[in-house]
Amino acid sequence: MTPAARLQSLLELIPIITDGSRPMDEALQNYFIIRRFMGSQDRRFIKENLYNIARTYGHHHSAWSQFSQRESINCDRAVLLSYLWSVQKKSEEDLYGYFTGEKYAPQPISSYELSFIKWLPTQKISDWDYFNVSEPIWNILQKQWTKEQISRELEALDGEAPLDLRVNLSKISRDQLIKLLLKENIKASETPLSPSGIRINGRPRLQALTAYKNGFFEIQDEGSQILSLIVGAQPGEIIVDYCAGAGGKTLAMADHMQNKGRIIALDKNLRRLERAKERIKRADVRIVEFVAEGLKEKCEAVLADVPCSGSGTWRRHPELKWVFNLKSFDEIKETQQAILEEAAFYVKPGGRLVYSTCSIFFEENQDQIEKFLRNHSDFKLHPICFPPLKSTSYLTLTPYTAGTDGFFAAVLIKMQ
Image (cartoon, rainbow, N blue to C red; front, top):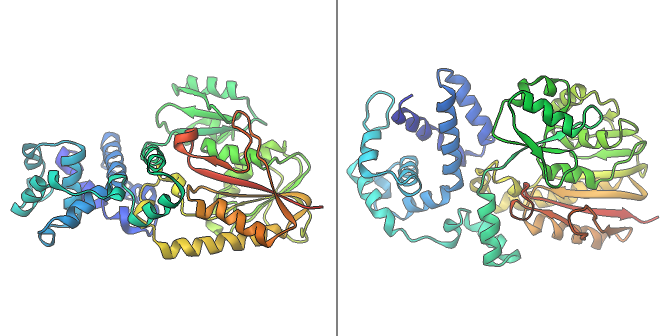
């Protein structure tokens, strides 16, 4: 593809950033499947730049919103022009060379668009646009952090997430897997925190490897691995993974339990649960069930990894910043409390209720635990000890503090 054709593809894809109907990576993958003529370098260019536009979308959309003649400019074209000018530092000559209107190229730049480009250096930037979040998100963060904290956390969340694996230690050691990967010309190293984690250099096609097909590893962020360890699942225990999703934490806990005991994996999203069943089969895990009958107050541990804003995953899903709204946020918080109530039903006296999110918002994290404890005197907060992290009341991981996705966890003990 020509550089101009690549930009035309970007122009076609920009609307999915704010669409909200499906994850951006899924929409992008479907776009590539339909256009099989695209080479690997074309796909890489388009993906990298689309994600960079999504990370900085607030800045570019705000510029279009402020421009006095915005009604004369298509919003998506304005976002792309702002990105090329402000982030990629393209010259006026470069832009005219791309926007030619020839076959597979974007339409020529209009006089209004030229005025817009020249106006960009005078743009007034609000705090939330500067940090590339929406105003509602900025207001939430101001309640919990200082401006300095917001700055460093959001800067880290604007970076690219690493590619982490969790080694299935019941099948292979971490050192052995690193050596196997090296034979495939894949450089890997131990993750700094998780004892079963490996960090991959680059973005190789891991699902094509024999080691993957044999169930030697799962793709799982180091933060998620740590959360699975926090549950403290032991061989022979009965564990409920209340919001199991695609089964990443279910598989991790099964490995910790040495495939002995029972894990009941539950999720209202049956499509995701079907994917979990495929992964469980590949990993040769035999202790997972999918029905939780007769287990009232019978379980040693229940993990409630609840639906949330996903703000801790903005490195992977920057589009979540632009589909966020307060109405949905309030609904999610109500759902989280409801799930906590339901999950508590299964915890035996002396057992553990582990609440977790992939969110950085206190309103989904600490505030939810405090609310639950006010209504449940039969539960108490239990300190979390996970060396090399400091012992703390809550586990809080962020890209800035731990190099992981944003995660929160609290362990509650049911009184005997």
